[in-house]
Length: 93
Image (cartoon, rainbow, N blue to C red):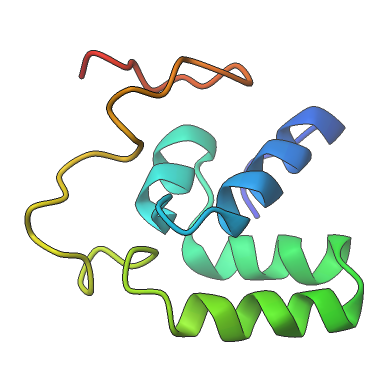
């Protein structure tokens, strides 16, 4: 990982990684972590059984990967979601 993350940032990355609609691109945009970096972070911060469950879920989730996403989805988050958790992505963009 290239970026030093504090505990709050790690919690936010984990939260975003578990969200089905949040693609890895959004995590990279906000925290500078590529998909492989997120996988390492998840493996190091979750119980092994939780990590396996997350990996299985991510592999089957079409919205986590830009290439698998429906082309009609052109945003990182739900358009009515308020800015939370120090999210740097503007809700108007």
